[in-house]
Image (cartoon, rainbow, N blue to C red; front, side, top):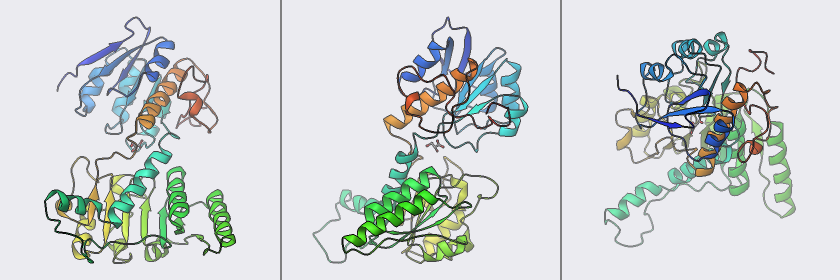
Length: 377
Ligand code: DGY
């Protein structure tokens, strides 16, 4: 077990907060310092093991900010509780790395960072969609390889998406933002699959369709698919925006890939295990016209054997939220979750997180996932 090197900020603070990776920006530190925290930051790039995190927590720790790459399980929450811990925040909106019932059993509120990743993640889903559709990475490699001998009628033919159908699986915040970008920007028809109807999204598409009609253009349409199979059969692009849980693990498997159009595009910016990556490799091999754009992988940081060799797959290293504004915003929200909980402030009503991102934040925790279970909301 390695002992991570530490940066200590505000050594005289009376509340010890451990942070398992350096975070961007300085506002988050200002928030914690103002709350009286001594902040101890593990500075290495290596992902800390459970034992290393337990050692970092030690026997005296009031709160922790952790990463989606760490498994915050019952053992870690017990260690935090034992050390006097009263708050935890994930530096992520997703929380499949957290055993939430275990945290609740320890009475530890768990924060996450919604609201600042929405457009950022949707934008990279759009970028992957068009990189895949227009074969940008293949073409870039071709240029750098000195293979371009001049314009040709058949060079790198891709898919035109304008006016086609986009399928969105999971029409929550990010799925909705992606859907709007594809509908409004590229006049695509929308089919979405979600357990709940997204009425504002449906109304948006309807109003946009009506607007297009007044300009003599074909209206765009929106339909909530009755089954996942209907969406997969119909869509030219399928983008995944679900949570990862037992019900969505391998949601896209060999059987479902086979339902998709042979030249469809599959985008995943949600969580890797939502797609059976081995099945995807096999499908992309046997369907060269099929394309995929992946930000997340089933066994990160590893990739399924053969994935990296496929020209019809665009792969990026889990960077969907990687803009300065978003990553600094995530740090501010994580710090506000911890600082507010330690100071006994209430949990904010779900809504606009911008007041938490600069200056003196509201006296509330922006997002606590187990607030109901702990009687905080
Ligand atoms: C999250 O916050 O869950 C994202 O995956 C980070 O990019």
